[in-house]
Amino acid sequence: MTLLVRLDHETDLAGFRREARALLARRVAPEQVHWSAGRCHDDLFAVAEPADDQPPADTGVNVPPAFLELCHTLVLHREPHRFALLYRLLWRLLHEPNLRHDPLDADMVQARHMAQAVRRDIHKMHAFVRFRQVQDTDNPLDPLHVAWFEPDHHIVEANAPWFRRRFANMRWAILTPERCVEWDRQQLHFRAGADHSDAPPADAGEQLWLTYYQGIFNPARLKLKMMQKEMPRKYWRNLPEASLIGELAARAQERSGTMIEQPATVPLRRIPAAPRRLPAVAASGSLPQLHAATDRCRDCPIGALATQAVPGEGPLYPALMFVGEQPGDQEDLRGRPFVGPAGQLFERALAQAGLDRQAVFVSNAVRHFKYELRGKRRIHKTPTQHEADACRHWLEEEIALVQPRALVALGATAARALLGRPMAVMSERGQWFARGDGLRVLVTVHPSALLRLPPEQLPAAFERFAGELTLAAVPDR
Ligand code: URA
Image (cartoon, rainbow, N blue to C red; front, side, top):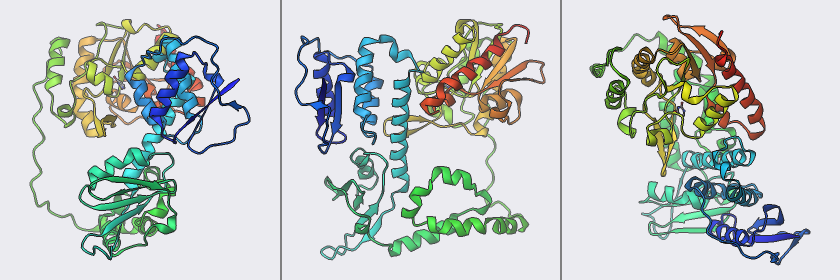
């Protein structure tokens, strides 16, 4: 018998938690529940009454904080099966305690991907909402600003506080097909969805923005592929500047040619001297000394934002030293490398390759966590080449102290730091390269790249990654 649970609205997290608690107390298994939200759908298979043949169990549901955060994001996804997935995960977390440590679990992978899609949608809304001014005849000195946006997921309510903070002093409304939100400088008001024709046409302010956009468009830095990735085509129709891109891109080559032919201009300001490097520890120092010096390092801006420098860890003189990119959120907080989700995946691949994490040295090319704040979340940002270069001497000093027999580069940042040249990791992975000092470096992908793959590609990608680590494991490399 299937139990129908209907939540009040599409993002009814409170309702989900209430119902899930009650279902768990009755020990109702996930496959016995059919979840729906919002409008009533006819359901041929559902019955309205709970199956009450089990005595209630303890309802004290204790889940990791990361799971609660996942719930908050996942309920915003458009997929109708999101509540079923969440309930299944909740059920499994209670019945399979090891689930939380399994980075390859299919349900977990799917949930992570869905949460990532929601976060991307939220980010795109921040980036691509364009307000147009509408004159209010009752209040000509206080115009309303209206934007049209088409989100992929149910993100309007969750995203509204960000716009309220960002545009606190102006009256605005964001119209979307499913939900609209308005800010009157006192309160947010939510209404039913609108039609594109309700959004205002271009205004005079927009002409100004287009002129500015034309002015700042740098033809020499045009990267069309990157632009399309960051600004997918589906957003173009609502972006005033999108109408200019075609023509500006077409003229980019000619304009950059003209720029190159111009005589060099004299810089108006003196270029500041490079920041003074902190005294490096000589290779004869110890790892704790090296770590203390790294912790103080401010050769690039990342150090000042991170909680602490994360040193490499493992035994001296190991057969292998693995080098990643930079610590992530959890590594930054705990001060240890590879202890977050990518670290769990890495450890599993090591085990599959017959390697013991305790027997190898694990480190990073960059010592501090670089991130960008989105709400309360610290989102990983790839270090620039300049930042990775500034950190390179710490890595080299660590290698000199640890004296591994061989190195493994996890991803492009590590490969470049270890080999001193840009590496095309996808085509050069699984191969050994020699360094000037005679040490050999096996290049492979970074485990976090696997975590970004669609769930159906993960098992094969994991096998390939673990297979490459096996190359490092063989003694006669
Ligand atoms: N990714 C890395 O490159 N290093 C870590 O320590 C964690 C994640």
